[in-house]
Image (cartoon, rainbow, N blue to C red; front, side):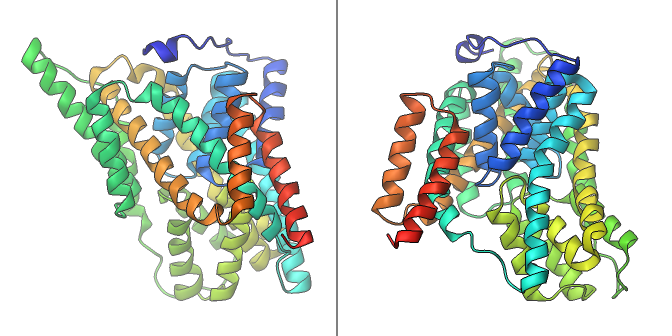
Length: 401
């Protein structure tokens, strides 16, 4: 473990009622205030569980982040489930995931009701105008802290730079992660062979092979089919079980089946659904809630939401107990080191892309700089910064600034 990770004291897991209440309150709050997508969610979780509560060291947090990136589904939600399991055991796993998802689901459900009732989406332009600059500062703070722990050697730094370049050029996120892990395993194996040699093996192969095997399930169903709640559920289970990458990848999956193949949605409805998932706090995958409501009302919203998130709980439950053992294998440890650095590289590229659309004038640049000062100098909780940014954005849009 690195020196930076070792100095972070952390509390013991709590498997009783008090630990579950802690987990529930934290992830409910993050679910209501987690604007900005997965990179922002990860940054806010790091701030809460590493810096403030010290439930985990940075090294442990990075290992869970790397593990979440190696399985399909919404990465920030899976990280929340991992953190709940580490803090509260198996009940904590369920509590953290449900509490992180539920606020976004309810907000998206209200937006879907308004969309059906009034034929348009409530304006969120002012909120996003103020929140996005704050998110830039929050994510940059997390990248700085996590990067100092993850980039332990010059080789890892080189892998991180290569991952940034590959991601910026449009290489698939999963391929970037896998290549980074394999490169580090080969490098570590070469150095060991040059030193002492010997036989090596580790338990990481299952976690690396599982995503690739699941990709084969992504083949779409044949022909147009009539809408049914059962079909809706199975479709979103499939999406949750095979999807890697960003919300844009989710859009491609939804468009191929729901619009082109089955004709359940129009192109406009799909784009509006994805827009709601982007502008509401919490996981982007609550796009499924909006689509479920359009197709099947309240029951459809619940069915679609459960379907898309159910695989995440399963994959974390299967892989979570393996994570602490991975570090005891030099192969799996090397793979995790590479994946951790590549995960931060992907976050950095997303932050750059978000920054280009967020910092559009003097007001937004000022908000980002002020947020950075409040985070770094005064250690202000990122949740209050996000709420303050939302209120500032609404005020500035109201007065026409």
